[in-house]
Length: 95
Image (tube, rainbow, N blue to C red):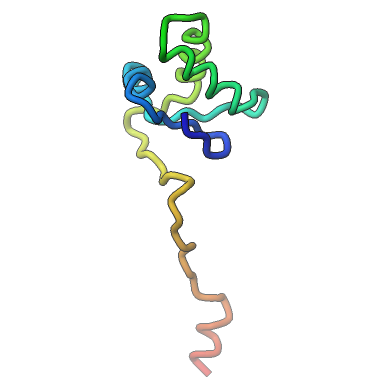
């Protein structure tokens, strides 16, 4: 598992199959849970059928997006913020 803040992404083929079987590509861990513990349990569930699979299914259904909702950019994707003109710039340009 790759942990990026509270977002978990698969890193092995077994984990990828598990994620795609539930129709998700990443999983957001709630603040009430430790992301590293959840990642360890998901990796364990990917190896064999354990009670950890039930935890993964419940978390996946919580974080699943609606089909018409576009995915947001990955948090590890460095993009500069859009630069908007300051409110006083048009006033100074007109002067």
